[in-house]
Image (cartoon, rainbow, N blue to C red; front, side, top):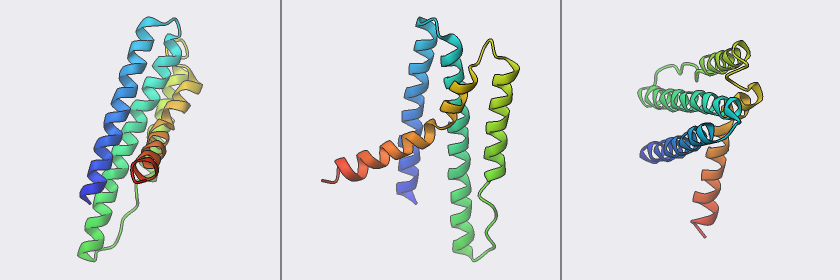
Length: 124
């Protein structure tokens, strides 16, 4: 499980770097709604990533102790995404809806890119 924690730390670091870039772009470009939407979606995506890591730790503990396994928290992650979409639809002058949806998928893109870099490029 320590390698899972190291992966989460790497993913969180990459997501924070992306969010800093979004903040800089929000401040220096005229596309404020697009970058605000990306920032909101990425923040919710990072929250969802944290939820799944926490649920995976609970899953691992339950398996080790021989207890019954609870759900992986899909409903909570979907609810967070729905809240982000609702916020962007409620305040369209602040958040761009398509950018929020793209931001929601950012963590998955970071996971795939990190996997590719760690397992394909660095292990040659």
